[in-house]
Picture 1 (cartoon, rainbow, N blue to C red):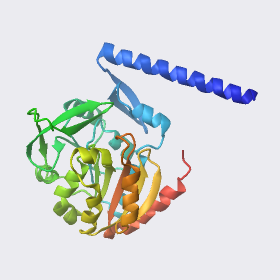
Picture 2: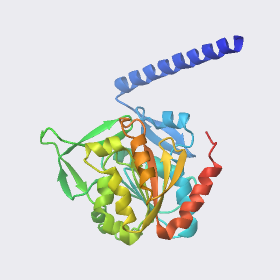
Picture 3: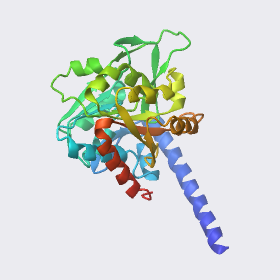
Picture 4: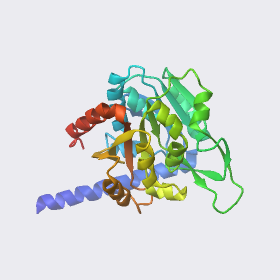
Length: 309
């Protein structure tokens, strides 16, 4: 009984301490206009806005986003010429995470002017990192969208009210054609809060030709905002030779292996993450049939880490 009371008191003190810290943080953000702070991520010092959620996420989930690094390291052992494209690069946190485990060229693409300016500062410490300031979409030109930036991320949302808002986007094909010296990517990471499916669907011919590992954020909440069909994604990739996927919770924890022909499992995953208002989603890594060996190696690696939290 005494231990229970002590534990309860400790939990209460922790909650009070966190509430005070969050209040102080919000006060500083307002007073100092969201200043940049220094934050160590996997051995790399990054600049990021005080409002950015990454330090809090990492404090709760120490292996958050490290799955990308493990996939990349295993892919590099098969493909010495590996290169990666990071669509929705934000401040460059994925570069820091990946470079902790492996070294290869990375193209970082982000359209938000504030995050891109911070990305430029962080990238000064890296080599073989190529920066492109652009929002990636399914057309080259203005789209009826507006930018929403909050809690350390920026995304495009549809201008459904017809207020005349628009944002210029570029297709990935167009961006790559403008950078012919960049090695065609064998790994593409997409984190665009809803535009992910539009990008993949538009670039099917490019993907069919390059056959990269595709790591994207799968969130039915954001897909609905852009009239994107999450169910169709699996069939479209299957039609061009992709046959397997690895599913991770947004905390970074490994959930399951999926054969792309398993419609029932795909429906279950879609159902589980539907109705969560973007607060919970999954990340999915898709593998072409030529990279089944990489998929299996990654799966075994993740299973060995099943209790790392």
